[in-house]
Each structure stands twice: as C-alpha cells, then as structure tokens.
Amino acid sequence: MSAANTNVVDLRADNRSIRCFDPATREPLGTVAVDGPEQVRAAIDRARAAQIGWAETDFARRRAVLGRMVDHLLANAEELVDVVVRDSGKTRENVLMGELWTVLEKLRWTIANGERHLRPEPVSSGIFVHKRARLEFHPLGVVGAILPWNYPLQNIMNPLIPALMAGNAIVIKPSEWVAWSSHRIVEIAREALVAEGQSPDLVQVVNGYAETGKALIDGGIAQLVFIGSVANGRAILASAAQQLIPVVLELGGKDPFIVCNDAHLEQAAHAAMSGCFISAGQNCVASERVLVEDGIYDRFAELVGDLTRRLRQGDPKRGTVDVGAMVTPMQLEIVERLVDDAVAKGARVLAGGARVHAELGDYFAPTVLADVTPDMDIMTQETFGPVMLLCRVRDEHEAIAIANGTDFGLGSSVFSKDHARARRIADRLNSGMTAINDFGGMTYMAQDLTFGGVKHSGFGRMNGRDGLRSFCNVKAVLDDRMPLHFANKLYPVKDGDFDRILGVLRTVYGRGAKTRLGAIVDLVRGKKDPK
Image 1 (cartoon, one colour):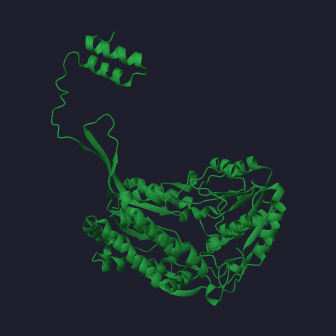
Image 2: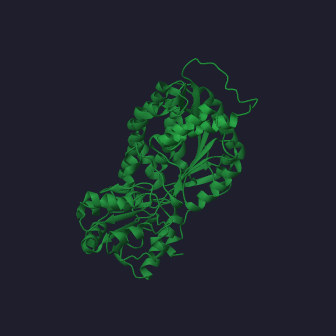
Image 3: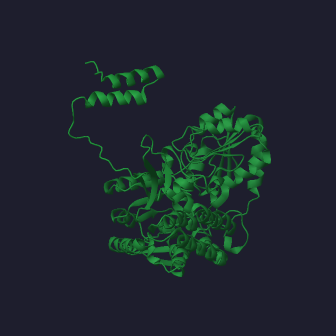
C-alpha cells in the first residue's frame, strides 16, 4: 500500500453507526444509524401496510405523485446537487447531467407512458375463438433494492419510480459509502406522496452494511433489484435463492468502444472522453476498452492524450473542475493496481497514471494508457476509474473478437461513418446495449430502451416497457368472449375418444391439404388409428 493511502477512511466505527465523509476532502459529514434486522423488518411491515391502499389507486394519482417529484427536483436542484457532490466527490456538472437529468427523463417517460404499458393488454386467444385472452399487470407488493455508491440520487430513483408507478412499495438499502445523502433523497418521494394524500411509508430506506442487506432479503420482500459488483451479485443471488425471491441483477461492465478507420475523429474522441471520465469513470457503462483501428490509432491517441492532459481535477466545491474524486479508497487501490500492472507489462502513459491531491482526498488522475494488449489484467477486470485504455486493432474482425473476449456484456459503442458497417459490427457484439456513433451509456437516456446486460453483467432489465413490467406480477387471464355456457365433458372417457381426438389433431395440425383432407375423411368414417 502506498504512503499516500495512510488516510483511508474507516466507516465502521462500531456496528451501530456509519461514519460519513466527503471523499473530495475527507471532511466528516456526520453519522448515520445502522438498521439491524428488527429495524429492517419494521420498515418492510410499514411498507406492506401502506401498499394495500396504494395498489388500489388509479394511474392519475400515481402520475400526480411522480409529477410532484419533478417539481421538487427542479425547485431544489442546486441544493440536491450540493448534497450529492459532498457525498460522492463528483463534479457539479456530472451530478446535474448524470443524475438530475437522468431522473427527470425517467420521470417524464414514466408519467407519459407508464399507464399505457401497465393497462391490461389483449392478446390472441389462439384456437379458443369463443374466449378472450389478456395480460394483466398487478403489483408485486413490497420490493427491495440494494444499491451501489456511484450515483447516489439516480441509483435510488431508478427502481423507486417504476416501483411506485406499478403500485408497489419499496425498501431501499443504499451503499454505506453514500448513506449520508440517502434520507434526503428518499424525502423527494415521501413528500410527494404526502402531498397527494398517500402514506410516506410506501418508500423506506434502511442503512447499514452487509448484515442490513441480508435482513432485507430475508424480511419477506417480493422481489429484489441489485446493482453492484459481480462478486456481491453472486452472494446476493445465493441469499435470494433461499427465499425464492426473483432478482434483477445489474452488475459490472467492461464496455468496448470500437473506432473504425472511417470514424469522425473528433466525434469519437470526445465520446470516449465522456465514456471514460464521467463520474471519474465510476460508471457501470464506462467505455473501459477503446479499440482503435490501425489507420486512425496514432492520431486518435494524440488527440485524446492532449485533451486529457488539459483536464482539471480537484474538490468540486472550490471551483470548476472536470473530474472529481473517487468515492471509495478501496476503488482507488484497485485502479492504481491495475494501471501499475499494465504499465509494467508495456502500456504507455499518455496522461495521468497515478494518484494526485493526496493532501485533499481520494483522487486518481484522468489517465490514458496506449498500447494496451488483451492479455493485460486491466483489459479483463473492471477498472471503475478515470482510465482510458487504447488498444490497436488490425480490422473490425479483431475488434469484435477482443470486444467479446471478456466475461462482461453490458454496453458497447461503435464509431464509423459507414452506417451499414457500424450496424454489422454492432450486431456481432455480445452486449445488452449498443450505441452507434455515441457513448454507449447514452442508451439509458432513451427510456423506451431497456437497460441491462448479458454474461457476468447480470440479467433482467430496467427501463422501458419490460423494465416497468418487471415490477409486476404478469397475470394471464382467459375469459368469455360470448355467453356460451356448455360443459366440456372429458369424464367419463368413452370408447373411441382417443381416435376422435387424434383425428382432430391431425385435421388441425397436419401439414398440407392432402394430409388434412385424409384426416377429415377418417374422422367421418370413424376410422381407427392402426396399432
């Protein structure tokens, strides 16, 4: 461990409280009480009692609650930005664009589209022409969410908004690293509920460590949303399996960012800057691997290296900066280890490459590493820090092979002026999301799209119609189209039933007119199936 890390923050002073700090300055923010199993069960009970009435509300009332949340966010934008900045160390602009904007867009989309996707949906009744079939979307009850530290505001609102729209209550367990801001953030929803005559108990927050998360899983919730690392996701899934709780897992990423020879140089370079340095790279859909074709590689490397060396870094509260602090000292250790290992194996440092501002807090300089190769640890392990990896590729085939050569499959990006070529590459990427000629994380802002990954990046989906419906019991209903009341008599079985049923199946499902005609003739004649 380097000497610069002697001031690592210890959150767990005891098992009853969390010591909260500003990662940009290590300034104490205060303490937050730890919720033990009894407090977690009480929170779930309060939510369950409140949900009974909420499940009966109409969509107009639910939209009204979400609308009041929009009003609160806009009216208190600067104060909320300051709260998140102090708890996360990220810049004010990153909070405004990466958290406030994303939440407002999710609210706008849900208000405009939620009812349409949650109303009963007629579907075909198939061969039952005298029946009607539909899908109904009923609330699950009390859902839970265990969330990470990288987006304090957005992470809480991401499951909260669809949970409420679908008629559920929710109990949220944020990361202990951003516990300080959690109560302020959930108050946005609780105040909106009260203003619409609903119980604030529909939204609960419980704080603590792994024990608190385990109590939430064991407490009788109907579903869990987990956002976090692969290792923690495995542990969460194992615990949830014991309770038979369905889980939506959004885990890590190692997103590829493919730059073809015919890409627009500045467009691709600035998108890569966004993909690597937003929130100091602490982003599940960060563009962690920039795969650049040989013909444009040197010019691209020169441009992003020059742009990165100009970035300002420091405490966002002291003035305008481009990149803020790392949220946790442990993540700072991971970034440093992976960068040092890559440099030792031949990667060239074009910008950054080390810790900075150790006297202030936990910072890693915006970094560009050139000549990174697929065999380096940093190309397969999630970095989750402000590091751009440049890997030279011969052609699109090598780019695709490297892009798909990890255990992750969350987001991806492809840059080419040839749209057909970009589509061809995108179609071959094993990921849950792809953006063409844009940073892959922007798919989140098109709320009709789903958000989620494949392989070790998790399963289940957030956002869009499918994400909203994931907070529902999707119930299949078959009822009468016409008031025909007759008994379908199966019992007692009569002689000849088998042959008649088989004849009907051959008539309905036989391939070709000759086969079906023969089956009809056999039925009329009462021909038996040869034994």
